[in-house]
Length: 353
Image: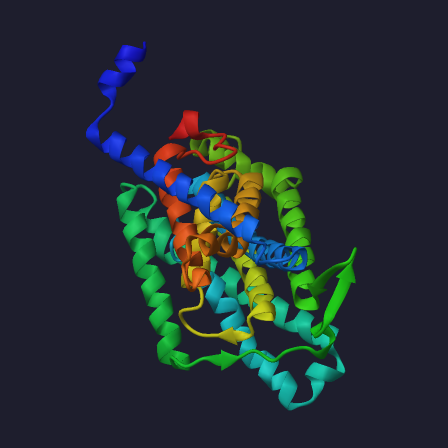
């Protein structure tokens, strides 16, 4: 048995494992040096952890769109990052209009509700149109064709928004009630971070409940298992697939509002990196698995926030936080190499892949 495995090992396998071991050794060494040096106190680590949880919650809501679509159509909707971008990009005009008439600060909760509903509606509409116009005619085509179409749709949406609204940054107005910090068990948490963490958790539970315990959710799971049999049982497959895109779009629009609460600036390219990181989170947790997407997003958010200071500072890198994106994409590469099914795996992988 051992001899067979050794005979199947190639030079590429050896190189990959050598790189993986070198990175692991660097992470262990850098972490040890950072902790022994005591450069950061407990309060700093807690602040970084809270920031990671807030980012992870946003990535989780975006990742839900990737994982739902993949679960039903077995395709990666790379235009989902622009679905995420479109909601807050349109909502910023409503927010600025409410500021101009004095409504924003006078009725902050209603204002926040209005921009959230608008963002969710815009993202859901664009997701629906993508499915109806770009993907449905290609449903019987080889998998590479809708994948290329998704990339083309991503560029189309990016440059449509750039052409209509310009390439400059647009500030999202801040709410006075979300300024300042709360102390929770001795831990300082910015109000914007608390809203992002709690909001993402509540929205994720609601969306998971829809998928698991509603009639539409049961139909979605049936279509995911077998479209032909689901159609024979009376399920409208086209409608359910459209509803899946709409649900993912709503999730992305809600994530967009939480994102601009943390980082109050919008632009036509704002969905690119969060979208890629959400895809990384979905793969990390097990794409096609909703709890896996949430778990992967939280792990990724923590690694992105804590990792640069913990792993890289001890290696003497002058600006470790500038490499936070490199950490996320390194994780993606190694997950795809060593465990393509992710942490929790994909429940349908054996039957459908």
